[in-house]
Image 1 (cartoon, rainbow, N blue to C red):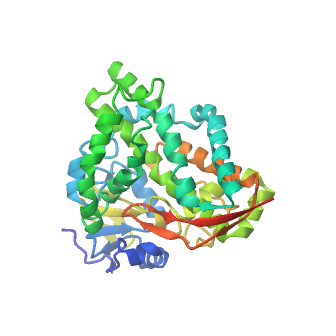
Image 2 (cartoon, rainbow, N blue to C red):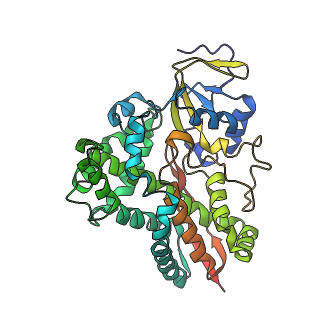
Image 3 (tube, helix red, strand yellow):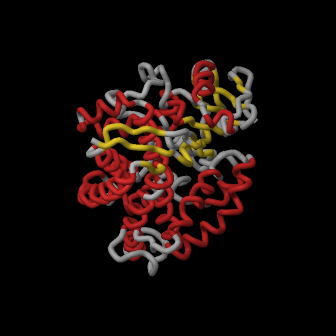
Length: 393
């Protein structure tokens, strides 16, 4: 048990619905309390400031991702996959698809993703009113990522709830995790039925994983789980980012008008969405060495909760951090992580989010949103529903 003699402490439960509904006042209090703060209810040190969060994420030698989940049961369950691996195993697994997920390689996909975004948005805009989550955000990434990986079309409707349960299990051993854990065998069943050599489409990214098996680069036993790692990383987070994109543009019509006046700001605008409402709010790390930070020494072996959502609102890093500003210099946000375990699919997520934004810009002059329904997940921040009405040019 780490010594807490010099560490600021908090009794805030960052995984409670009360906090998760609007966590930013609690995040600010944690940042103000110190560079690391011990959370009594979660038995972890919270890393809530930008500088320290980036440091932890960037130094895999000092801060291990072996315990990326904040409960032992799930860390044991997920085994030695890419999320928990260090080099050289991590690099060996990640390199299998890294070239195909690089921005340069994805450029060839851009026309098709753009076309599909335009078709979907045009259909929804013609209706005038729709749900930006269920009709748009949950549909588009599942189709794009599913086709890119080569998953069979049958059964894709099971993916989002199962992946949501999987993300819940990265949190502490709370009621949300305990409810989600029994769903993991169904996810494993889906993986073994849909992410195998025979089930994946010829020429897909998923089949490229099996090409690496044939080349002797990775063992065949890890191939289905490696395929699903990219599916997991590329769906839920992008769903929530697209939902937040529509919500924020409705909330901030001045920003929507600025974007309409200058569509070249689309990449910057999508980054601002990810900074402002980070789809991933927290992941775990474990200190491998004593870490002296401020007046506190976090001892080796201590569990850390790196708060991406708080770091991206840190006023020490961002001027007027709680203001949504699409003109902000936001290239170094932490919404996709940072360092060795930064999101491998972030270039694809940006491509999808930007395609949806551009498709909306082509005809929508104003977005009016009804009351959003918040989605609660231990790790992810998103919406369950967002009714919108759009006004066209």
